[in-house]
Amino acid sequence: MIRWLIAIFLVLLIFGGLHRWLERIGLGRLPGDFRFRLFGREFFLPIGSSVLLSVIALALGKIF
Image (cartoon, rainbow, N blue to C red):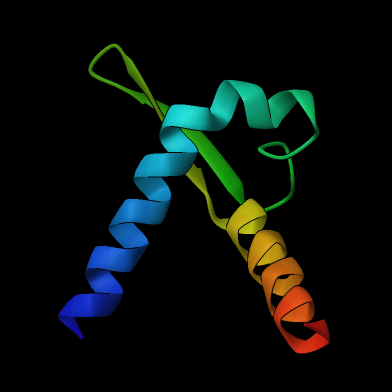
């Protein structure tokens, strides 16, 4: 269970750092991607984009 929590945390951390670049290619504005302000900072939870990238990774894994 702890491995999954660490993996989810790392994926969200990577998406948070790369969200400006990902927005240029269209990710980050999908339904299910949440953006909110709290204490003057903007937080970004890319749940919809994560699901899409997981499906793409799964399809590539099945092909190769």
